[in-house]
Length: 118
Image 1 (cartoon, one colour):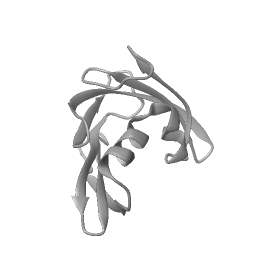
Image 2: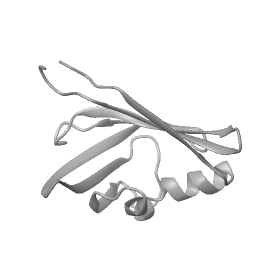
Image 3: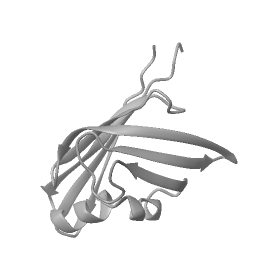
Image 4: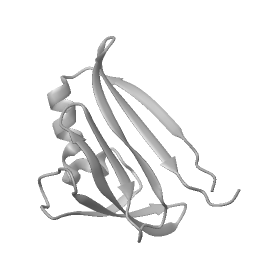
């Protein structure tokens, strides 16, 4: 099994609480994830937390696919980590972390898709 590891950070000139609240709101996720077409969360559609599952329908290069991921680590204003559920189109793990950085708030995205035998 080949696993790719991607990590990217950005500095945002806002408070951690403000950025975290915005990014944790599933109903705003499509604003910063351009390929996202449909979204839902269980068990509670508003409150994220450990064990929550986010369901997504994405469109990329003219093709639609679905993914679902379960929150495995939940530390508000610090980090949220997830793993794909078995029915997801792409098996992956990853997450987002928030920390005070130079000139603002540092947001780091981690994505580790499993690409099968490569």
